Length: 419
Image 1 (cartoon, one colour):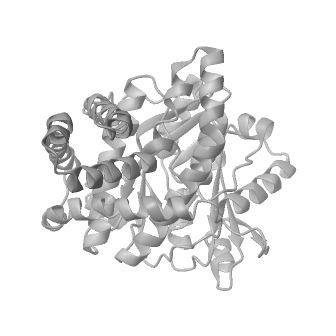
Image 2: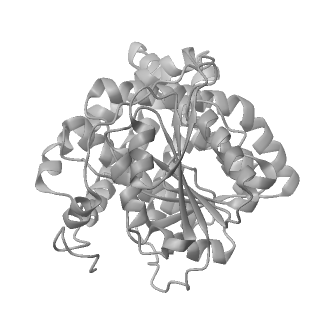
């Protein structure tokens, strides 16, 4: 055995396991059971939004939320204008939301803002069944609350909805970012839900049991507060479920620089959460004999997978010994073949999404965009202990009826929802 085998064989086992696992899981995301029967609306919802300098988009979201296919008397909208120096609070208040203004330069970021807003909500002593979280730039499908009402009545406690894009044609970055979300929604979240495993919260379009929040609190204030709360709940045996037809339309970054800053924050946060929760999930999963808890470490290992696989390929490429190539080239090639199948699956998903021709034009740039995750993984690992929040500016002001017409949900922007 070559001395490098001591290092390279374990690395290759790790790479092959992850590649094959992702590949096999993905097939379970090619189908879903539609939410055809809706229970009578009975759940009372608090819709909360953490907004920092979002005057350009917050009004459209509040207007949209009041127009959902759900009894108005069962819905309240709360906005925290967090460290704003624009008219976010005024715009949200004029649109009909209950607005709280927060100023705290020491504790910056969405996690802190949500925790502060939830404490205000609990102090109001109003009865709710679910808390839905949106970002200020979002627009929401008319049936979102109907689907979440169904899920709460089934006993689900933490539910993530489908994160779609409201601006996939604005730039190549927005298009490839949207493609990434479409694929992940199917071959990861939907797939794991179909397998009975836990999904991961996505920061927006999510619904959490009010009783659960009041009992355990939010307590997630790192750079990826959504993933932190997911793991916090999963560690005590509460999985995150998936609602494929509870759709939110998210504004994707217009420029590559914006996407870089946002994704770097995500990777930093993943390493932070991984260091704190992987041991807990493994220990509690074994103790409870619950495979869902142990399997929950897989999304936390994604950046590490990129680092390990990249280092493996670099060492492989600089090694010219025939025996080394014989040991590693064939298994790696077999693993690489799965990539082509994954792109075929991706094309199938995009066809089902009925994306416009403009988005198809950007498809060849998708592999380029995905490769940029590699340097981000290394940089994110290096900066994993930094917790400075980086705000993503949103400026794509779109009326929700325009989105509904674009998606074929209504036929005329002046009509009520007719489909």
